[in-house]
Amino acid sequence: MPYPIGAKVKLTRDVPVTADGRAAGIGFPGPLSLATGLTGTVTGAGQASTGTADALRASFEEQLRGARLDSFATALVDDLRQRVIAATAPGAGPGAGTGTSYRVRFDNGFVLDGLDESALTPA
Image (cartoon, rainbow, N blue to C red; front, side):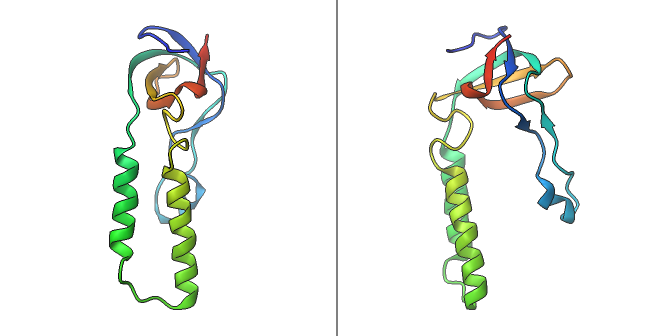
C-alpha cells in the first residue's frame, strides 16, 4: 500500500539506526534501533535504487582482486564477500519488493530515509 506524503505511519519491526555491536570496538556507536510501533509522518517517497549496492559490490571486488592471501585469510575474505553479496542483493534492502522507499519523521525526532513499505503500516 503506497503512502502519500503526510500520511501517519508506524513501524512494523525494529529498524536499526546505527552500526551494530561489532562497530563498537573501533569507536563507532553501538546498536541503536527505533522500536516497533513508533509512529511518524511520511515526509517523502521515491524509487529505491540498487546503484549503491552495485557500487559497493564492485568496490569490494576491485580492492581484493589480485590479493595474495593465506588459506585462513582467503576463507575470511570469502565469508565477507558472501555477506556483502547477501546484504546488497535485490530483496535485501530498503525498497525491496516494492521499488518505493520512504522518508519518515518519527514523533521522537528521528528522521529515517530509505524505509521500505514492509517496515510501515498505517497509524
